[in-house]
Every structure is written in C-alpha cells, then in structure tokens.
Length: 335
Image (tube, rainbow, N blue to C red; front, side):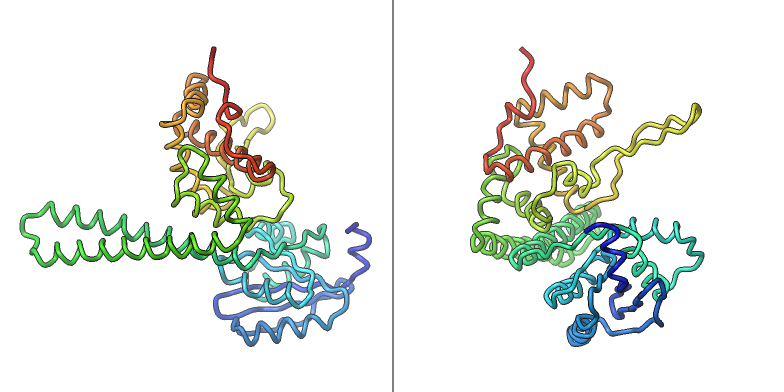
C-alpha cells in the first residue's frame, strides 16, 4: 500500500494492551478520540473487534506485549481487520520521535494510533493454530527445563551440607523426578502437534538433519520459526532473532566494537545456542568455521554467535528449498 493510499484511509486505531485492560484511541483526519478502556477478556475482545469492524477502512496498531496481545490480534484479524503488531522497541523509539514526556496507557494507545498514520502499513500475518499450539508447548518445555535446572542446583547445595535431613533430600529428588516426567509428557504432546501438521512435520525432519539439533532443540526452534510470516528473507530471520551486529561509529572519535543487537526473539537465540555448541563439537565443517573465526581474532563467544547466525541462514535455506542440512555448504574444509 502506498503512503498516499494509506493517508486517504484517514481511520486509525491504537490499542495499548495490558494483562487486565485494553486502552483504545481512534484517529480520524489527524484528530484523536477520547480514550476508551475495555477488559482484556474473551467477551470484551470480541465486542471490541465487532465495534471496530464497523469503522470503514480502519488500520489497528498494537504493540507486542508477551502473550497478552496475541488473542486480541487474532480476534481483530479474524473479524477482517487490518492489523499491525509493532516490536516494543519500535514503539518506544516512535514515542521519542513524538516527544512524549510522559508514559500512560491512554498516551501509549494514542502513540500506537499515530504510527500507522505516519508509517507504511505492515500487515500482521496470522499464524496457524498448530503453530500457536507448538509455540505454547515449546515455551512451556523451556520453562520446565529452567525449573529442573534450578532444582538440580538446589539439590547440589543440599547435598553439600551433612546436616541436611534425609527427607529434605528425598523431597528435592522427587521434585526433579516430577519435572522430568512433565518434560516427557509435554514433549510427547508437542510431537503430536507436529505430526498432525504436514508443514511442521516436514520442517521438523529437516531440523533433525543438522548434527547438533536433536528432538528438544528442534521443538524449541520450530516453535518460534513457525510463527514467522512466509516469504521473509534470511536477513529478516536474523533481525527477528537479534543476531545481527550493532555498530557504533560516529565522526573521527567514536569507534566502538560492534555488539550483538539482542533486540529480537530471546527464545530463538536460546534455542540456537546449544545446537551451535554441539555442532561446533561434532560437525567438522562447523568446527572449522568456528576455528577460522577465532584465528581471525574473534573471541570464542563472538565466534559462537556467528555460528548461530550462519546456522539460522542454513535453516532458512533448508526450509525454503526443502533440502536437508549440507555441511559442505556451511563452510569448506581447508585443503
């Protein structure tokens, strides 16, 4: 949509999404309406979508707020609305451009309403139900794994002291056992979701072709990648993951070392970290690439981040061409 065509719509809405409330501001011909508040419940989300669907040529803009914006975006999209979902950093920087000195929910809603009025429209792509379910499973598995890791650390501390009662140790062991059983159950159900969807199943099998990606890592990665709109480039994937270097050079005096952006999806970066470490150990081509970077002056952690980025490039190509991982194309071994 051209900027001229967009400006002719003249109807925009911004919704600030909270865990309990939704704040709506509409703009028409450059004038903002009085803010309205709705409860963030299924019934009021449906009523809000029905209300906004009556407004002709309307674009609705939301900010991605964890899981809280998701159901509203689905309700608006399924009601036939044009929906934009902004990265929080983009919304924050746009508020700075507008010189917002205060931050309130109604003011944030007005900022979001002005964004599509001034900027090109980028439609939100609705993920499939299977992709939404898989992401819920993958993130729950990640959370339970974190709890298991914490429980094991606690057990280690308890065993360090000879004064710890035996019953306390038994309780800690029981907690770890229960967490392990929950992981088995969640993983099995995630595999069921994958098996029920041919697209997800095909991508899952391709991920397993990478030496370093096993079942758990494949579920974690696919849970995030399946949510991305079709047609994105590998550079857009890297930006989504926050794995691109951020440069800081200005004039003749400011020349700081580039740093990893980390402005993208934390879950995807976490999902790539262990496969990158494993591939560096078990795949000679990945190992050679890592050693090449270290020899060129990169620190080990910087080299691992570069492996993560290149691995994401490879996965993008695998999905696009429906081809398994080819380590010879990842990096050619020195003659």
